[in-house]
Image (cartoon, rainbow over all chains, first blue to last red; front, side, top):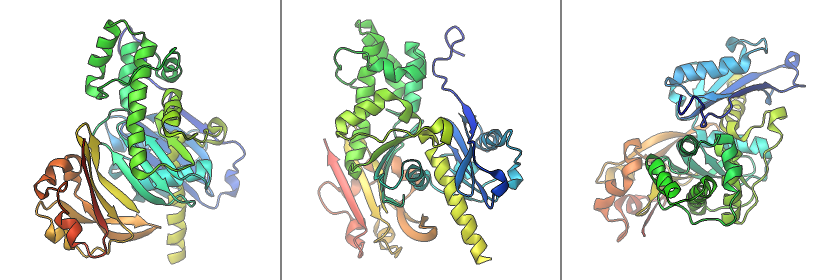
Length: 299
Length: 95
C-alpha cells in the first residue's frame, strides 16, 4: 500500500471464459502459462480455440504464480488441471512452471500468439513487458525470423510505468490518455532509468511541469528506445504491440508516430480472449496443441 | 532464426548475432573464443530441437566488457572469423 491507501500502479487483473466454445466437443484441451516478471497469464484452449484466460500479478514465487493463474483460468469452467492434455510454460519464470509438459522461450510463443491474434499479416512484434522489451520479426506462419531482447535495462517497460503512476498519483490505466493531454510534445527525458525515474520526475515537477507534461516527456523517451530496437531488427508492416504496454495509448501512439507505421488495433479481446497482453500464453497454448498432437502421432 | 545477443545502452550498440539457420553446431567458434563466452544450446525450430551456438547467459548483459579484449570495433573477432557457415556476425557501434 502506498500513499493514503490508493494503489495507483495497480492494473486490473481479470479472468474470462469465451462464450460459444463448446467444451463437450473437446478433442484436445491445452494450456499455456506465461509467468512474466510482473504479470502471469494463463490461456486454456479447446481444440486450438481460446476457451478461458486469466491475467494476474506475479507473486514472489514462480511455481505458486503458475498454479494460481491456471486455477483462476479454470475457475467456474468445471475443468480440473488434470483434464488438460498438454501444458506449455513460458516467460521469465518458465523453468518454474511445475505442471508444464514442456517449456518454450517467450519469443517463439509471442510470435505464434501475435499470429493467432491478428492473423498472418503480422511481421514485426514489439513486446513491452514488465521488465524487458523485445523486438521480434516473424513470417506469415508466426515463425520467428529474428529477435532482439533488451532485458539489461528496464527503461521503458511496464515496471517503469508503475513507478511513475505511483509518483504522479495517476491511475496506471489512465496514464496513456493523460500523456496525450499536452498542447505541445515536450522533449524526451534524458534519463529513462527506472531506478532514477522518481528523481528525474520530481525535478521536472519542481520546475513547474504539469503531470501530463512529465508523462509525455517520459513516454516519448520510452517510445524512442523501443523504436531503436525495432530499427535494429528492421521494422516492417504489419506492426503490432504485445505485452502490458499495448494497452497504453500514450506509448502506442508515439511508437506509431516515430515509426510512421500504424499498429494493428487489438481485437475485441474482452469477448474473444485475444488479449495482446496474453500473446505469450496464447502462443504457448497453441504450441501445447502442436506438441500434444506430435506426441500422439509418434505413439 | 536470427538471434541478437547483447544490448544498446547510452554508450552504443553491442551485439553478437547468430543465424540459427546457418549454424551447424560445429563448435569452432566456441574453441576460438578467448573469453569462453559461447556455448551450444538447444533451440526449438519448427518443433524440432536444433543445436546452435549462443552467448552464455551470464555474458549477455555485459557483452560490451566480455568481448572488449577482441576489439570488435576495429577488427573481425575470432568467433566470426572461425565460423565457416558464416552464421555469426558482430555489431559494435559506439556513439
